[in-house]
Length: 367
Image 1 (cartoon, rainbow, N blue to C red):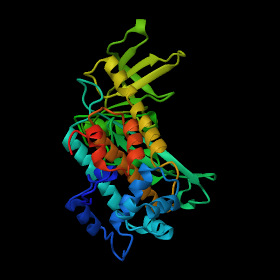
Image 2 (image 1 turned 180 degrees about the vertical axis):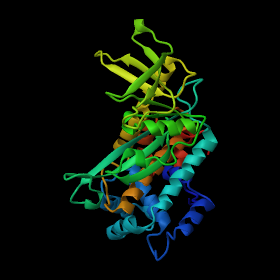
Image 3 (image 1 turned 90 degrees about the vertical axis):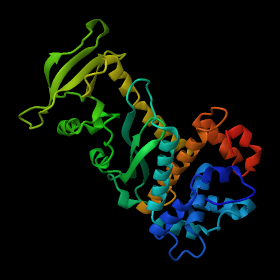
Image 4 (image 1 turned 135 degrees about the horizontal axis):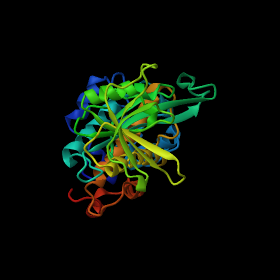
């Protein structure tokens, strides 16, 4: 992003957002229009610093930046009111494009993420809701007591590939347009997304998926595929829905039923017929990876508590957290010692403003 002779660890991280890309993006969205002091670059760096250092408020971030010579050389220090105003008005799409720019970098450098050897790439779809006091964000109202924003995510097991941010009350099925595009991957989603006719559309498009069956589902068994009563596994070909309700599927699906430790039935629905029963169950178990991702960003980045309450400010905050995640991910992939994301995040946080040269041998393969 900037060129400095005396680089810090922070410089190394943000250097991923460099070249002509950033200038073109800022210009395309008029990011610096009427911005005489707190320009877009300063805004981006401030939001990333806020995430890496886990500042609790704009005021805390402002005070840290204003009192640190190294940061003042990097950022045009804003007032708290300027900071708040730019979060509310500067186009969030600048931050969104930076996020997708880093996602594309990750794909080019490290290829397709694979969770299971000899199984097609897995893409997990789910959403998380970040709640906020209703009196602070009535425009994000979910019910009479709560307000919140929903972050729908397409996750490949290592990083999010697509994000859709909407009001918390929007139905999950309406938040995932453009998520199902790769016929060479297997998509996992939970039963909250169930829609039998939608399953038909996915199947017609050549999209493979695994999901959970719903309780009291209407299922018409057609034939047994490969059941193993001794292991309490039942694998059958079925159609879903019912004619009276107009939900009967035109396509046939595979229903795999097993039992949990309490003896309760657990069913999986898939349109994949050429993998073993064990593989299908193993694939669905990886849905938990996205829950771990949501937990990670809420605990380690600034996403759990909003610092601005109009939709633009909320989206800037969420995309800033996701940019920070991607910067740590890209850094993590080239460390000499194979740190976990959490360990590297802690090391970066502790040494963010230390000279980069002191840590290059420990953190990176090459300068």
